[in-house]
Length: 459
Ligand code: ARG
Image 1 (cartoon, rainbow, N blue to C red):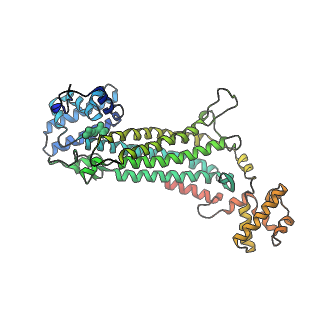
Image 2: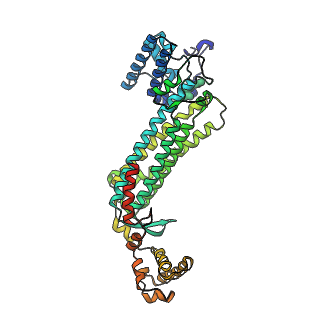
Image 3: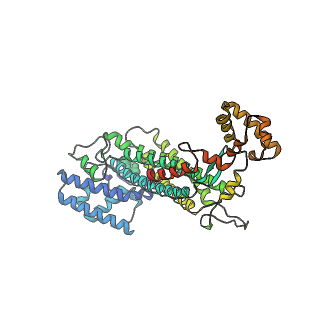
């Protein structure tokens, strides 16, 4: 049978393969609430502008409310032959209220309808992500506050570099997540324009009030160009871009959790709640949640790539290619939401092993930079020369199999005669971290200030 929405010029229905490649209801049913909200605003505006009868608009709005209830109750039947959410809702409306249902689509097309629904959906998704990220930041700031004095090795190239505090390390991620939130807020602000009333591509001859519809749906204003409005998916790309960067941040933290849980490090422990065992090796407690957060970033990055590639060759205005915009976004919302929750769970679950972290700072001549800085500050050596002198002292310690602080003053003076006893004050790990008081540095007092600042800026 020909389609009930465009059957006028169609003698017969689509082939079953056409139906299968065309159908989107399986995923775009997730736009149901937004589709109904958009239609209610549109119908109300049509009546206010005298384009349809007020009594018809009332029936339409009542019918749409009833459909919303049916969907919420799970009694709504989504039909694949009706292709997408827009036609499913409209067809059911016709069943419920009859003829007035056919007036709803006046001065509207599915092109501006889907663009509006999808913007509303992404707007909510951005708000959800921001709430999740705020919770994760809160967990991390709490943990950082308890570990402003816990020293651990800081690494570059994953080689022991300089001692830092665990709290400082955690706050690095709090900053990253803060930028993620900023990107989501930026995307939200740019997204918040209403495409409805752009119709198929050219606008409409009906005397609609696009400003009223935009306002009713919580948009800041209507979109300025009808062709752009139905062709634009920047808001989805920006959402995915912000999500992909965020997923990369979570993946890096996940990687650190995996490393920290390893037997070689044992900087942290996760409880049974966030680990799994092995079916063969009874001793195992594996950080699977962290590994999966690391892996799932691939899906999010893939979604961004996928949609960029869908969009890259499309002429104005709408093409059906754009129906492929939703799954990557839905997939990302599911994946990233879960990853953020898993990460917050792990951060609240983990116990740092301060003794192991401190013991690890003993390796690798971790205060060599402090020694070089001392030679500059106290003896007035140019930094390059101080670096060279320190290198020779490190070599000496290495030959002796000793830590820097274990060398005698005579050993040190054999390399640089002007070194005196006071140098030993800067060779300890605690002295090293305590000295890093520059703004944004790792000294415990600086990190305590950073904790308060993070609370103020992010929570
Ligand atoms: N299901 C379609 C989508 O998601 C709705 C818009 C269809 N418009 C059209 N001209 N075929 O993009």
